[in-house]
Length: 69
Length: 398
Image 1 (cartoon, rainbow over the protein chains, first blue to last red):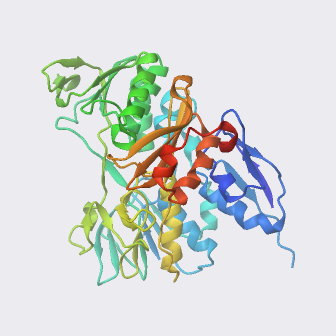
Image 2 (tube, rainbow over the protein chains, first blue to last red; image 1 turned 180 degrees about the vertical axis):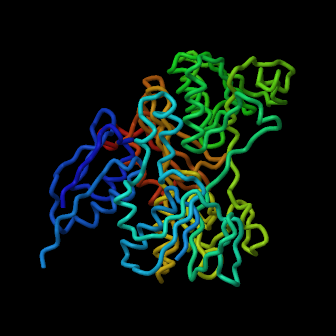
């Protein structure tokens, strides 16, 4: 999967860090989201989807890769 | 499956059903004709013009197509037949269901004479667009009510350079959620930006002339002249269509800890009152985060789960350049203590104790710190030990 964040939409709630702390962080000065990795490992995929769903500013998108048969 | 309400909670319920692999028929009914949109920016970026209205749209048409739902936008549910398992729409049609999610939200309270021209409420995107258009004419603005919505609207209007007065019967703004001390800080914030506050005096009535609002008459007999009046008096759950259904409707749709109101009938979002086992109390939240979390929880239980919904609520408000974020609950008789930073620096965090436990934490321009402090609410940390400790070292909450 590929993760995209919109720092202009972000409201610094930190919900993404609570859901997936290895993928998201918050800027020190204002708490705006920082993406630690664009392509998180498969093991974190569910946490990232949860972060995207919960984000109260809807500032996280997940692009799923085509499933290989 | 039928979902009534197509805003944040209703949309999340639909998406969660699909994400959890439910492939059957799904109908999503919403009384607004717009595609589902996000409400928090309405009183912020939409009023100031920082965002175009389209930016609040939550999903593209393509996203909605992928839901494979019968999307009934611009259609209002008018009645619920619980034993017959049917929802009746305003046009007369009735739709059967096996399971139902109620997510109809809330409606703003009004005052008598609210139909005068120049009187606004703010709940929908259309409300926000209309209010922005009115603000662009450079009016004198009076906001009635200094809760989150009223203070955010006042800040937005003030940022636009308008003359703004806020009238509030409580002695300070946002007192009900946050108490006197934080309320006083919010009052200072507004005064520092040139917004006038008339706190501690109620509103007697709206005054009009020739069908237009002319001012707001206060309980002490004075009148605040106004060209635009914004009513931010709180909301009532949108349950009118459920009267006579047999569902318990005291403060919203009364649900159990699973968010179930009757067998196979669930509620989520602003309209739902439920028993939160984490705090041991019934609550109804008008928070953006809760709409998502509760819809996910309700659908999980609808699909056969048995997980009581026990969240630590999260909510926030943005006013001028200040962001206040909060986790937990803030009972009126809670004690409050600053645990990090200093209010005079405009950067601090506070904890709230109630019945011997930490029940809430608040951050004032302290997003990382308040996220860390949330743990105290999750763990129901003992208040006595906590309140006696010195303020936390910044290193421990970063």
